Image 1 (cartoon, rainbow, N blue to C red):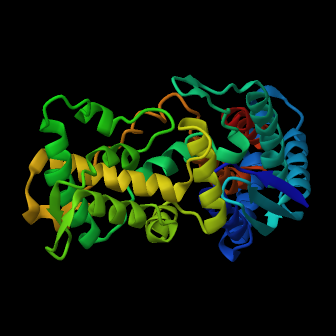
Image 2: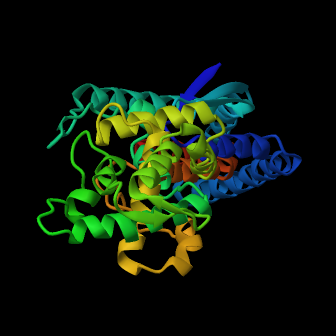
Length: 368
């Protein structure tokens, strides 16, 4: 049994090979190949007759060519094999049965070359060096090139949907943080609140406004000190359980059937971009607080607080995928090649088999 490895392309690749197997095993395709064989014999005989009459060529040349084509078709497309498709990025696999031997062989050779290229790429991969230190390199075999940054962008736009605590944060920002920012002699600025720096979160910087002598209101409109408000906000947004629904939504919208694998990939991507120690739940919580804080500072309107968690802020990762090998493009090429083989194979059992082989080998290099 052949094994085909795809890196982030499981939905497309598995569907393509299953469709190809279904076409080859359909009665319509079997009827079409029979018709093409008959037409090929008739056309070959007619062309052979014309060449004999005009050039004095061997009258059996067309027959030999057609016979070779039929033998090649019987040897390459009639035998069936099973092929396992495995995707280490999505951690999914499926076995496609009754696939023509030629299709499996073509896919196996192209995939072997792809695996070699991926292995070399991962071997020489280097992590980025940021102001926070060196980050570990991202491995294509486990992150799927652009798949991981796209997943991280989806996660960055997944927020904790709690209108009460959103209102609580906004009240804290408008009353406590604003007071701290405007206080004479303060060292707190919007820049060091929204960009806390290495090893510090926005929740850490918001603690600078937890003044026990300044008051705000909670989401039930009860007066509380800024110190009490900060304690309640920190307790809620540092509880991983409160971010679990947002994390599930991020994975569910990214095509992952294995939630654990999705969370692991988010964790790996966070380690390679923000540094070790940032887990997906904490990342979502910090993104939520940052989004509410930014909105509160910009609007100052308490009437819009219930819309906070529905806002879709522009993704900071929109340009991350540029220049990264995108497996979706590879899958489009593969789908085109595999799905055209059932149709060009109809000419294999005719005297045109040499052109068909040349076309198939050309597809092989096209996929690579």
